[in-house]
Length: 141
Image (tube, rainbow, N blue to C red):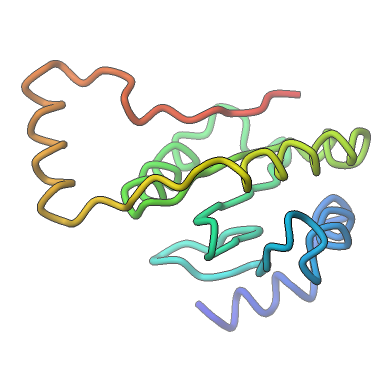
C-alpha cells in the first residue's frame, strides 16, 4: 500500500499538484499536510493529522460513487472530517478551495469515538432508522 501511495505522489494530477503547492510547508493555518497518505485500507489525497482533516480531490470518475461514501464513512468513524473538491474547482478557483480548507482547519475538533462508543452509536442509529447524523458536505462543481 505504501508503494502505491509513493507512486501516486510521483504521478499526481494537475489539480493535486496545484493544491499541494498551497498546502505544503504549513502554509495554511500553520498545519502540516501529507499527500497520498495511507489511512487504514485507503490512500487519501491530503491529510492533516493534527486537525484530523482529510481533503480529497475528485475527478469525473467519482461522480455518484458509492465507494467514496464508504471511504468517507470509514474516515468519519475514525474521527476524521472529510472535505471533497472536484478537480475543476481546484484548477479554476484555487483561492476559494484553500479558503474552505482553512475554515475546516480552524473548526473545533470533535473527539474521536472509542470502538465501544462507535458500536453504541451504530446500534442507536439502527434502532432509530438511521438518520443523517454522520452526513458530510460534498462539494459539487
